[in-house]
Length: 459
Image (cartoon, rainbow, N blue to C red; front, side, top):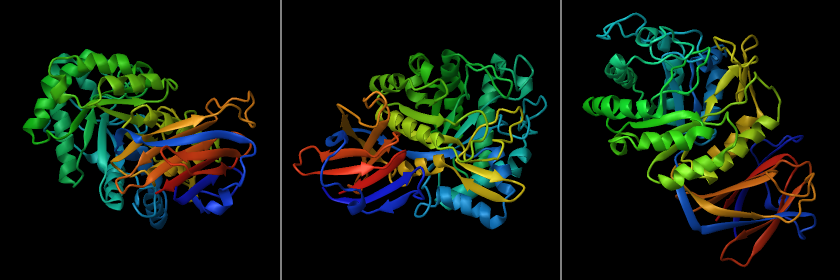
C-alpha cells in the first residue's frame, strides 16, 4: 500500500487542509486501537459528479463589499481547480429566494407574453457572481431552482406564504424557465439541470410555492420537458422534490410513476434539514439506479457561527453518509454570507463556509470550508465510490466505548487510479486505526488527531 499523501485539518491546531508526512502519522504498534478500516476496491458503486455551493444574490452582495483582490481570493479559494477547493457544481435561483435582498421576479406584473421579462435584478449581484465563479473554475454544472413563480401566477397572489401555481399558468411557467435559461446562455452561462421547485411542501414566510409529487411530474412531463426539448435544451436534467430526506422516497417514487417520467425526469434533489434519514437515500438509489440523486442544499441554521468547529464536522458527517448511500452530487448552500448570516429578506439567517465582514472588507474561512475541501479537492469528477468497512469493538475515547458516529469514512477511486480515503474523528483523543486494502497482506497503523479529518491518497 503506497500512501502518497495525507492531508489534515484538526481543531486546536494550525492545520487546515495541510499535508503531513506518513512518518508523523504512522505508529509502530496499535496501542489504544479505535478501529480497523478496510477499503474494498473490488466493490464499486455510483459515480460522483463533484461538489459545489449556491451562488445566491446574498452571496453576490456580500462578496461585492470586499476589495476586488479579496473577492477574487475567495473565488479562487473555492473554484480554482489547482489551488482551491475545486468546486465543479453550483446552484442558483430563478426569481428571488430568501437569500435575496427582497422579493422580485423577472416579470413583476401580469404579462402572458413575457415581453417585459427582465434580468435587471439578477444582473446586479447574482449574474456577475455566477459568471466569475464559472470563469475561475473553467466551467461549472449549474442547477437552477425556483422558490416561487411571480405573485400574479399564484392562487394566493403572493410570492411568500406558500400558495400554488395556477394550473392555467403551467405552460407559461415552463416558458418562463426556458426564457431564463435563454438569458443565461446569452451571457455565456450554460445550465446543467433545473429543479421544479425548492421545498415544495414548505409554506414559508419567504418565497415558496406548494406542489404535490404528481403535480411536479405532470409539469415536467407535459410542459417543462417538451419545451426544453423544443428550445434545444433537451440535455438539461429535470429534478423533482428538492426538499428534505425524510420524504425523499415517497416523493421520488410517486413522481417517477407518472406516465412519461422515465423520459423527462432525470432524478431527485434533497436537503438535510429533517435529520439524517440516509436509509431514504439508499432506498431511492437502489430502487432507481438510473436516476440522479443530488444533495442540493444544506447549512447550519440560526445565523453565523464564527469560529465554530461542529459546523465542519456536520458537513463531513453528511457528505460521508450521503455518498455512502448513493448520492451522485453534493451542493452546499450560500458560498458566503455576512457576519450575521445574511442578508436574508425575512431574517432566516444561516451560517456559511466563508463569512464576510462587509464593514472591514475581510473574509473569514470557517471550519466547514476546510472540511468540505477534504472531499472536493481530492475526489475528482467521475470518481467511483468504493466499499469501505469500519470495524470497532471498543473505542477508548468514546463515552460509551462504542464507535457510533464518532468516526466515519468514505473511499473512492479517481479516474487516474488513485484511491482517496476521507475519515473523521469527532472524539477528544487520537483515533488510532489499522488501514487495510482487501486482497493485500500489508497494512498500516496510523492515527488521526482529536476533532480532526484526514484525506489519504493511496496508489
